[in-house]
Amino acid sequence: MKNVVIALDIGGTSIKGAVVEENGTISYKESFNINSNHSKEEHTTELIKVVEKLLSNVSADCKAVGLGICAPGVMNNDTLHIGGAENIPGLHSIKFSDIGDKFNLPTKAANDASIAALGETKYGSGRDKNYHSVLFITLGTGVGGGLVLDGKLFTGALGGAGEFGHVVVVPDGDKCNCGSSGCIEKYASATGFINNAKQKIHKNLLKTSLTYEILERDKAKAIFDAAKEGDILANETISECSYYLGISIAQAVNMLDLDLVLIGGGLSDNFEYMKEHIERGVRNYALRMMVNNLTIKKASLGNDAGVLGCAALFF
Image 1 (cartoon, rainbow, N blue to C red):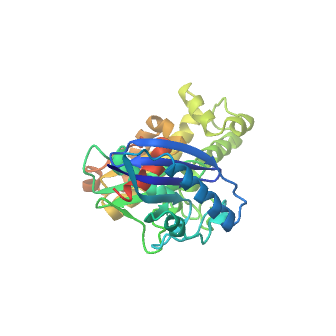
Image 2 (cartoon, rainbow, N blue to C red; image 1 turned 90 degrees about the vertical axis):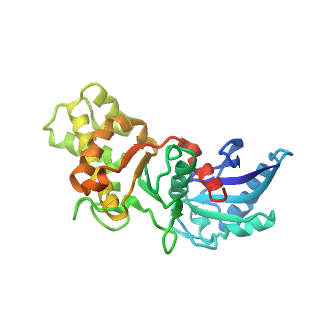
Image 3 (cartoon, rainbow, N blue to C red; image 1 turned 180 degrees about the vertical axis):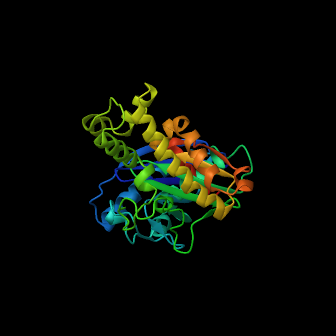
């Protein structure tokens, strides 16, 4: 009989649910809508229904051995969601292990970016080598991160380790939503790329086909599309924002002696256009010995990273 994990990846608009085998095979998966305005009690009821649906799709030759959950925000060791997911306030204080108890399933939970780091390390871009210290960075509307150190998920004292988006790269730079200034999230997120391009358009120093209207409509994709056509301003934007990302990675490399950095999230689709500039930032600011031992590459699991990471908590 094969062991499987019931995996839930809770996002702002949906829950990705899956039944995952030990070798990383997803035998069943489904996406469920989530109402971000639901109360704690309503979210709990909905999560129970999702687990019931997934368990009903566990084949007869398999046994569910655990419930793995990832979500935005911070979880403590008792799998109690203690905050940080401002866009889903009803998750606050949900004790996910209570849901597992209803099905007699051991429960483990962690931040979504941390879980993605674990999934990529075990089943994705990190599986081809026995990497010791892995940083996973997700580039989307914001910037998130997760750490796998010595093969184990590292979550820190409160469960909040890996908040890579708030590494400061520009002292007294652009004001960040976290309350600090100059965070890498303000420069290397999709929003950061767009704002950087808009600032350059406003200065009117570089030739470009980009306009405010195009950026509002097509978002960061417009910048990369224009760069492929040789647009000077678009290429300058990619170079600058990616270089800042490299500088922030260098700080993590110097602190943790990383041997693998994985880039995921929506912007990673354009990793090849960013790679040269990221590596330049790392080379200029990280210790030479550590740079020589470092691999930087694109994450490979896409939207499955979360549920596979949930399984990796048990396997």
